[in-house]
Length: 241
Image (cartoon, rainbow, N blue to C red):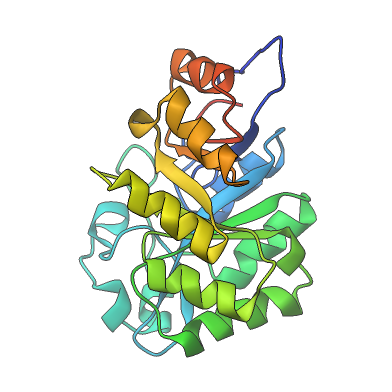
């Protein structure tokens, strides 16, 4: 573990897919490991299964984390839940490593008083976003949740349903910067951007319209220190505390 020591204000640190630099990503073990440390938030990814339930996994397929190659959004929840995942060494053996449910993730965030940073994977229909919001609300953790997505319609849907909810628009690649700023302002969204696309000027641009900036995925102290010097609000990381 690296620790970010700064003389000035420290950005809010978010554990990417849980503390995935130590435990297998997007597992309850990774979430608990993050919960036991000083992170502000725990980030994860939620998919809608083929039978309309919610499962925690990053990829569209289970192959990278479970060897078995199943398409997440066309498989049933029960089938996905029955898989035993690999550990970080690529080998199976730990029976506790299974795909978490949305409720399990929220329970852990709530137990350890960590903000949930929840990525809505792929485009979701409004009823599925409704279902996700309902589960989080039932757990009493909606005020401690930040929704994020690369899919702008997902973010617009969240904003329409929850006008004051914290929400961040995910950006990667080669964005049209003025279009990004327009979307942030129009839909009252913060920015969650691939860190190497950021400059001090871009952070100032976002702050100028009253929005915040989260950078992903920052795993080197020198990069984190530079972003902090530029006034970044959040840093999402696998390993830096």
